[in-house]
Length: 247
Image 1 (tube, rainbow, N blue to C red):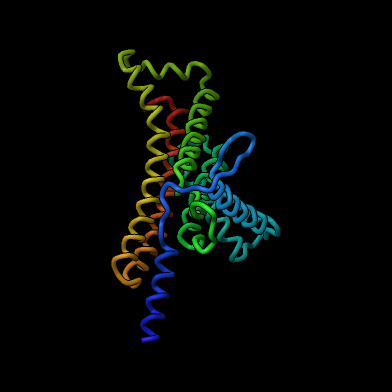
Image 2 (spheres, rainbow, N blue to C red):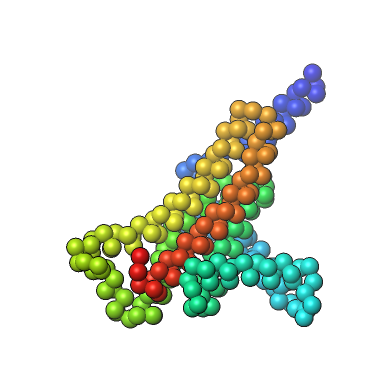
């Protein structure tokens, strides 16, 4: 009987940890603005992880790379390949931007899946991956949109806006609408997939033993990485498209 009660209490604690609080946030007032504190906290943790990794990567580079240096060089080469494939020969200046997007989203998604955020109790809301908040995904999408316009304007000047009346001025409203839907699509694609993955795990934990949800969590790690790659690839493709001047 004692073993049964202990097992029930253990499962209850695991269920409480896996619960998702929807619509609840811990707010901070910063300069007259109300911000989601839990998103800032987890974003700072992700940024700290990336900064520490960067410091380790450049601390003592060797002409003959070690295992750790090989890993970081592989990641850089991967990001360069994505940028070059989508942007073309002028990809060089955009590697830092595409790399930042990819790494921030990747580490954010994995931190939400691997780090036990829910053990830390907050007065309101809960800690989770930064990309689990629609404001974060919108901000990333808007940054991509700004980069998209900057790339086109820096390459062609005001002549960049001529694309809106090509191949015929009749398509002007549709071409303008297309540019507005790009960041919207990026934002909701990323936010929707991350939130759906969390909800699937929570529902499975509540319905079946933990033996089934655990493989789904590992699958979530894979899909989280894919989402980071999709976002970075689309961002690079939009930048390359704006520099080429055709759809």
